[in-house]
Image (cartoon, rainbow, N blue to C red; front, side, top):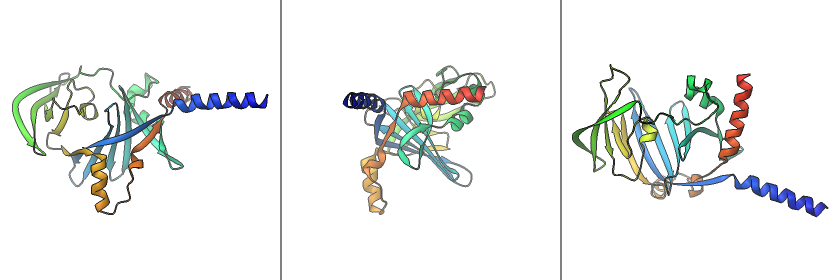
Length: 232
């Protein structure tokens, strides 16, 4: 009987572990966000197939992280005792969703109205950034009559799509090179190349630092349970 219980426990443990997905990020796209006195950095790490992305915004006040899997993007964090496993940040999600938080228990930060609010008009002009050519569009909010538009430069033929990280409601796909003169593309490379570059500066960074785990189903359920408590 003891052996049977052991087998059942192993089976349940295996099922539980199977839901924990492992993501290895192999590519990085970095933007510099210019401010008056300093610059923030937006780092977008991607898996080899570009199906999962880790977005980390570096600011003087600390770092903010979001994990995008398929169509869903989550505000995440990791605990000191287990830094390789992501958890959904409840308070962070609440702050980012603002009023939308009151109407849904879905922790995804992805807009459900993608492409409905912003319009992108091709200007016919081009720019060269990092020795690459990109097309200039004028993007404006069609629901705001006072919006004169913002100039973006984008390569719509690129297999890298950074549009959802810059504006999730913009109905375009491709690699954005700049937004106005405030958000500028700094680098597009593999993590392997970046690690080699950092090793020359004696930075202790390992390839294992790019491997993380996330149980999407369990984390969404935990978020919904916490949401119920807060809504009571």
